[in-house]
Length: 305
Image 1 (cartoon, rainbow, N blue to C red):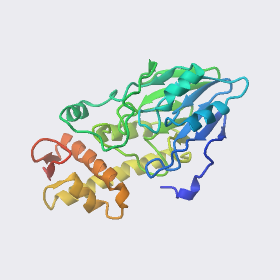
Image 2 (cartoon, rainbow, N blue to C red; image 1 turned 90 degrees about the vertical axis):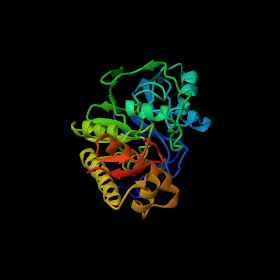
Image 3 (cartoon, rainbow, N blue to C red; image 1 turned 135 degrees about the vertical axis):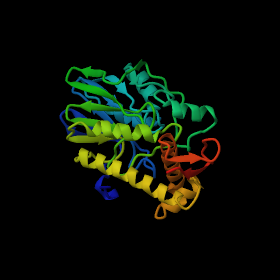
């Protein structure tokens, strides 16, 4: 199900026409965690929605502004979530265009009670880069419709990758940001990410008959149902591997990641450890495993069943 790196390699900067009034601009922030870079989408023919302005990069701001035709203006800036590769440019773009910034909330919005308690106890993220300064001009809610003269977007709250993460339904298409991507599975890193919420969001999207997903990184996903089935099965497979490893005795997320992700390059092992921790927190909530002591990133966990 995962695409080869050569399958998606567009130029950085130009606005690529995807049809039906949708264009995509690739930001210049390629990395091991962002693939070719962040996809910024422009939707509409006159009053445009900019979805995920991207990182705070003057060249990318110039590329977005250069894509505007003589009879076009940015009317809405929509941020799907507050990771630093998606949201920071929103404020500069807002100043340049006068358009309001819409999002589910600030960096803490949508965080589950479990993750709120873990953060309060001192658990911090794994360095994924949270835009803690982000503040939208207008908060949008699950089920709300955001509209322009020739487009309409349905806000779908999809927490998991981040508590404030939203997808945007556009007819039978959906802008899935970092929840569903074609090139890799989504990172879930507590306390900002929540695997219990992630799986529920996958099931929620799976209940709809989508034709295409436009992700935050990588190429359009043309088999949404198949991709969601793969993501769900992938997570269930990781869960089974964690439980199998714990059958030999208690272990930490650090030890489990290195025992399970044996083919993973070293640069990705810290992210793998955060994913394992997300599974362990989810399994704790389901009374399948239990920490030996307080629930924490460094705790040793044992099987209960």
